[in-house]
Image 1 (cartoon, rainbow, N blue to C red):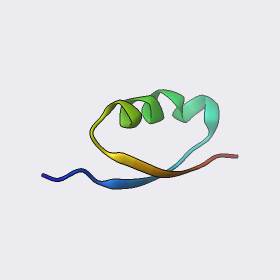
Image 2 (image 1 turned 60 degrees about the vertical axis):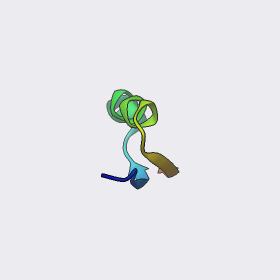
Image 3 (image 1 turned 60 degrees about the horizontal axis):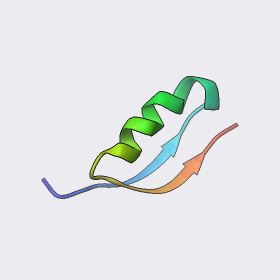
Image 4 (image 1 turned 180 degrees about the horizontal axis):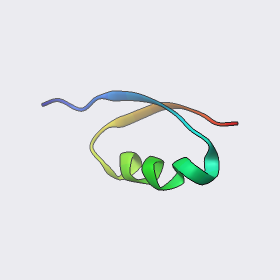
Length: 35
């Protein structure tokens, strides 16, 4: 499977560990939206 381009959205305290996992993966985070 080829890497995905990801737009990540989440509440900072709740989503921080999930965002870290995505950033450590092969996928490309193109935008991050938080409250």
